[in-house]
Every structure is written in structure tokens, then in C-alpha cells.
Length: 151
Image (tube, rainbow, N blue to C red; front, side, top):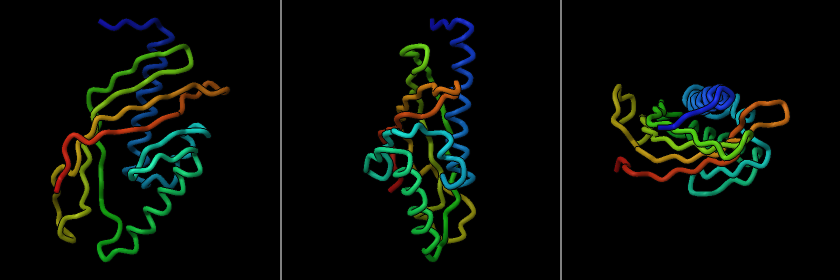
């Protein structure tokens, strides 16, 4: 059984909220509005098959992705991330790893204007976070491994 002291328990809640804010930012804002606040400057972020080496590269990826999707006939797809089995493991007072499952639903790749979609991807996600000088937890590493993918 995992036991946290009171400080770790408070940090675990803050870290879980950080992960949920990340998913919300992707779902609602396509990574364009608040993503920068969630990441450390030197984040390592594996997305689109390439590891981005800092916050600016991650933000540029989401800007480019949005522009590319917006230019398609279907436009920017609707999508949602659902998280499950989220686990926090502390490496120290100011660092932790988070592992969780992610189910990704999107209208990308389905007939235009279809009102329902099935799961496009299920992945195992690994994040690392660290507390900054202001005491805020931020993502320092994002990586995922798909376990199921819609074809």
C-alpha cells in the first residue's frame, strides 16, 4: 500500500490537477492557450513522433498542427482525452513521475460531420514533473506508447 505524508498528499493532488489541466488544454484549446504555463522551459516532449527539446518547440508543434488541421476540408477535429489509472511516485520533494492510461477520442479520420466516434488511440503515458522556484508543479517530460490504435 502506498502511503504519503501530508506534504506528499498535497503535492499528489496538485500533480494530478496539473495532468488534468494538460488534458483540458489539449481538448478545449488544442494546446494553443495555456500549454506554456504547464511546462518547464527545458521540457522533453515526445509528440508527433519527434522529441521536442524545450517549451518553445512544443508550443510551435501545437501551432503548426492547428494550422495544418484548420486548412483541411474537415477543419479542426473534435477530440477528447480521458485519463485512467493515474499513479504518482515521488523521486524527491520537488520531483515526481506520473504514469497513467490515456484514451483518445477524435473525429479525425472519420467521415466529415459524423456525430459519433470510437476510440482512436489508447496509450500508456509517462510524465515527469518538477516543482519550480515559485512552488508550482510543471511537466518536465512527456512520453507515451500506444497500446491500441484505430486503423
